[in-house]
Length: 111
Image (cartoon, rainbow, N blue to C red; front, side, top):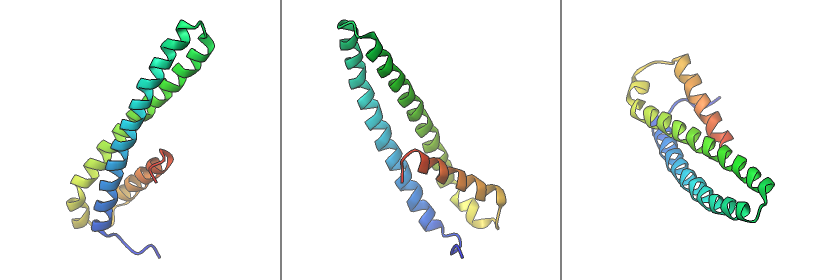
């Protein structure tokens, strides 16, 4: 039904995921730098409400970048342990571990 486990597909998908995560992290941090400059302009113009909204957005994006960094580390770990996964038989823990990463990746707009 599902086609089984192929390590080559997993390696490829993990590498793609890591590259996408790095790209998204870079994009988000660059946008946050620009938004910080906008906040300074809003504060200079006494538009405190708009500045607060921008600050909340920056904080949310910073948390997202941190989550992407954690996800990238998990993908690196999984990529390093593919050899162990190949030698072991079906392991429920590893199945849920992989599923959780795909779910997190999907919810952080990686796919």
